[in-house]
Image (cartoon, rainbow, N blue to C red; front, side):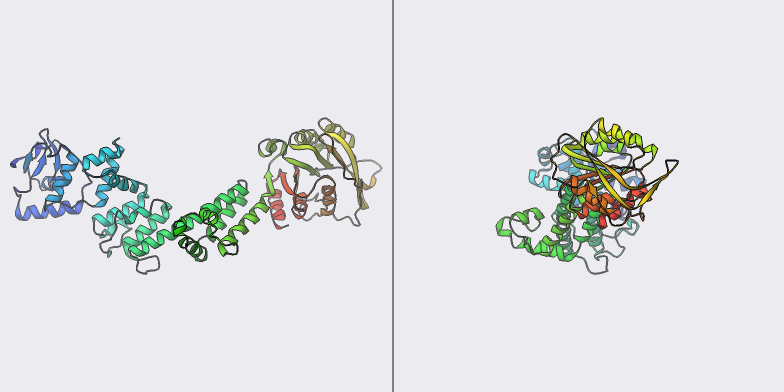
Length: 509
């Protein structure tokens, strides 16, 4: 039996859901108009915990009243939460529990360590019902704020900034929202915002059917993007090229032509075990994606492009520091490089030979173009780690003045030192490279080398399909020739600007 008792009887509150300010204000106006009614008392346990009538308790406090009708006793079924919900359902004064309230209550109970079975027993629900509401916790926070606001306040919340002032009551439901968790956060947010407003970004009507369709399209797009990302990341190392490829592919899969084809392919497979939202891999495995389809075509084009691009990689840095982390042991078939012909470069030859010993496959070649001024030092440094194979004479039509000597020398050839890692099978080749004109390309680098010369050297020490390293690549002539000759290429360049030039040249080759 309820009695008029001091508000101080309440010493604690069992919170089931957050207070709704609009409902508190509504109750305040009602109490001011008709007073407190005995038939709708506050429900309080013997130790002073309020579990029924929390909104009314807040309204009474704000009105400055010191007494209220209170029914003291244990909850009917032993569960404060279940009793609070039952009282809410029975009371005409109460704000009805929405599915948002139930969801947040379940999240809170699970967050305190209760199992889904314990929550179900507490609420008098099945475990399956609890599980469905628990899954809504994966919805993006911003999207959930829109849903909860629209459901609790009938969509009329001008201050929220997300829900339009003129929005009508929104038909969000627990079942409708089950499509959201697999989507990206920004996609969830966009869908909830449009349904709350009743309009899409172009001002067209947006209802529950549109919500479901848009969610399915987003899911299809994400499935296509996921398989593309997987393929690209498998085909390309980390870097600017891969980032650019991922961005480009992301834009491609947004196009309706690909999403529509995905749906068309998937919908015809319902009886074959593929769901409409199955990923692209499943469609391929089922033979759904025709070889000539636009979607299969664009993905295959990406595979081909990225596998091709993967063959050429540019690393910025000093090869003595970058190579140990970037290049695996015995992963290179040949090293072909053209270091500077200056005194300071002599100290690079021993580290170059040590690198070749580590990264070359057995029998691999290291071919180094060089001048003759420091030839003895070059030979001595390379011989510390590698086996001398031969010297190739590279013709220089018209000659080249060598200024290191007092009398001066006009050189008509320069050596390309050929060292190997262990025994190498010679294919029988000329040790002289003749060029009709001195066609060294100086457009991209002051020491730019001739593509013809580099191609001749590559043909002598490597085969198409093999991988070539140039640890001092300059503007990338070796990489250009490798790409044209269907060889994999890794280039290392100390200067970042020069490396950027090399990347562009190689990509365009």
